[in-house]
Image 1 (cartoon, rainbow, N blue to C red):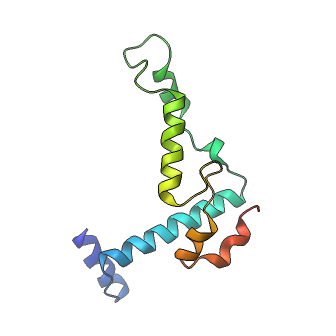
Image 2 (cartoon, one colour):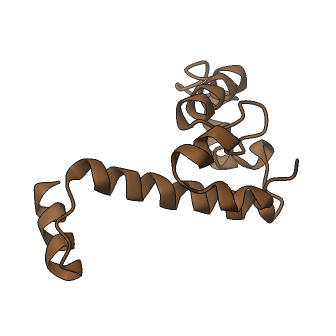
Amino acid sequence: LKTLQSLISIVTGIDYNLSELARIGERAFNLGRLFNCQEGLTAKDDTIPSRFKNQLEGNNPNKGIFSQKMLDSMKRHYYKSRGWEVETGTPMIRKLVDLGLENYSYCLNE
């Protein structure tokens, strides 16, 4: 991370600390999520590819390691840790305010 921090400082001429870089990354990630929500993607679209789901079913040695219920639980936990609505996967207003992105709340279908 220190190497990345140094490279970004060299390229931009701004001496960011790691905390600032993490915040910039979180802002970018949430903007991407807002765009996806605006384009109609929902929590239903946040899933693993079917080829992996096939590994969870049928007659193979990996059967039973994960279940759809477990994957859904993991997704809800992920959304909660991101500050997103657990059921929809959309960023919550308070998360947008915290990141200084409240002007983008129009992207949410409320």
